[in-house]
Amino acid sequence: MKKGTLGIRLAFYGVLAFVLAYLGYSTLLFLILGVALLVEKDEWTVRQVLQAVVLCFIASIIRSLFNAVGFIGDIPFIGVVWDVVTSIIEAVVELIVLACAVAGIIKNMKDQDAALPLASNIADWAYGVVKE
Image (cartoon, rainbow, N blue to C red; front, side, top):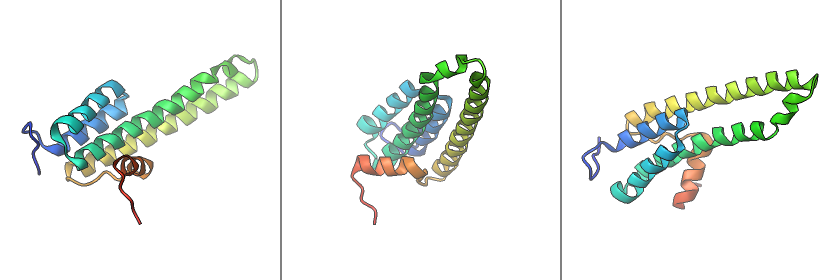
């Protein structure tokens, strides 16, 4: 239960970041990342916030890809099927983001690394950590 320079538990930043990632507030995520990087200067905290940022952007990229090809929904017969398929895929993505965010919150509350599959690899790469 380490406290940072501001007197706030370092795990709070990770928990807040995962909540914001699920809600899709990328601007606030970057503000939390800035506080973790510039004020707290704790590697574990920054890695947790980075994982939340990656989680938020994966969901955002998938949504953007479907919106980019949204014109397919205007085609008379194919459009109905396309809308159903994209709705199912977006619901699955939201469920996966929720599950990852809850897992990250629970692990951060226990002062453990969230270790999300793709997000932790990107956070490791950002910090230059090499795993064998």
